[in-house]
Amino acid sequence: MPAAEIDIDLEEPDSWPLPAETLVRVVEDAARAALSEAAPAGNMPLSVTIALSGNERVRELNRRWRDRDRPTNVLSFPTPSDMLLPEGEPRPLGDIVLAGPVVAREAEEAGVPLEEQLAWMVIHGMLHLLGYDHLEDEERRCMEDLERRSLARLGLADPYAGAQT
Image 1 (spheres, rainbow, N blue to C red):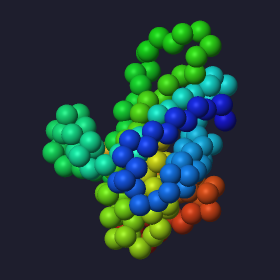
Image 2 (cartoon, one colour):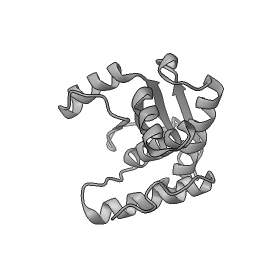
Image 3 (cartoon, rainbow, N blue to C red):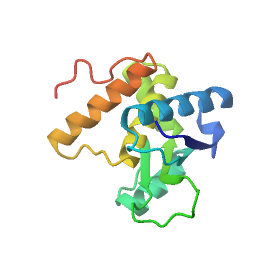
């Protein structure tokens, strides 16, 4: 796995009912687990920015970029692959923004700890930055398999267990 700089921005810490140290640890571990499973070949250093935000910021981004006027759990904004990079700089994968209240609600609905749901959403967002998607059945199965393997690296359960595929 290439070296990776993971910049974690606690934009709205009050939207997340966990201590900042826990949030940072979960986000960093999850991002590294996804990179361990799906990082691009080669040794070029990578970078990613992950923002822990609230519903209003994510709702605005979702409206602006996806034409959906509601908050969602995670949004990923990949860096264009043809972007020119300064010599010696890490390749930026892009940005991920998560909405604390949505992720917390989904954790409660699923009956899992918030840390586990957060890890899953970070992994999901990272895989989008790495070029994976779930629009077609085959790519969905591939992405879900990478999510399962990344979560297993963290000792976390398969969120798709029992779901129809």
